[in-house]
Length: 416
Image (cartoon, rainbow, N blue to C red; front, side, top):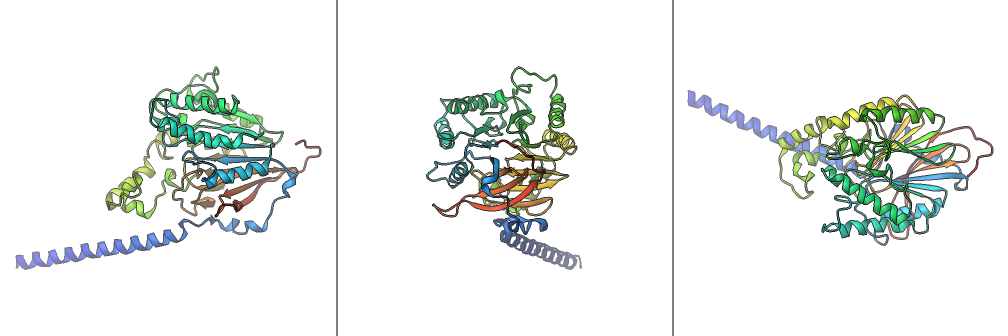
């Protein structure tokens, strides 16, 4: 009887395990196919579905244009890089009355290494491909740093970012082409006109290992890192009558990897985080790793305690104001959020693309190469554009989203 009982229990356990495995396999297949169906398609919230029916003013009424390009550090030459070709098209269209901001991770994988490194020549070549765009450009070029520019956050990252800053500023012959200067914390400002102000901060400072200068700018020390917040708030208060573009590397809202969003495939094959072809099934480990990244986080995740604390304090300040456009890179996709009368964007797909989830607080998301543009018009309005590379050589770049994000009464006598 005992043998029979054990036999029945073993059969039941075997059947249960088989049913669980079958159920998981069916769920995984359904979830994967569902995800695959929308993954490469742009997502628009219900409020933004009709965006094409609301055009901006004519191009000849543009007063200033700002391009925001993130994570371009795996770029090729202009001849074979469709993203750089799209940037060049924008430069031609925008003319001299414009600004372009590179949002960090300007060189993969480890910024600009020392001359003796085997990676140095390739890093210089990538920077030269970018900088060649500006040989005849009379507008303003601004670079800021990301985690890869700081040697992926390692102890010696400060020397890497200083080396990159020196190279870029010398090539462009502009000491303010890399902000904040000297690896400092910021915030620093760049005046555009009476309505538009560009403000730059160094978010990598908050998660960087090793030396990082505790200064707003060189020669302007903070006593503690907490002094950054009142300095930022003072600038926002002084300029609350203007539209402020706040440029950084790390996002404050994200539906992608650094915001704790993962693909179904990454649940089952977690080693694909290391290499996309490492298809070794580890479903339990994959789920544990996802929970870890979502709630505890690696150094560059929004859930990593220093990053989470910085984000919380920064949002507490930003939510006191309106007419702020916070733009970052870091996640390799295109995202736009409107939260509490402010705007938050991720424009980090300059050379790579990664999964981004639809929905949530997002108004628009797309897993595709591209960059974002803010256009200021003479009627006082400011429009957001999302531009993606052309589908074929010789064609025009694609407009995949646009929206009026600020409307002000026209002011007579505006100067260009």
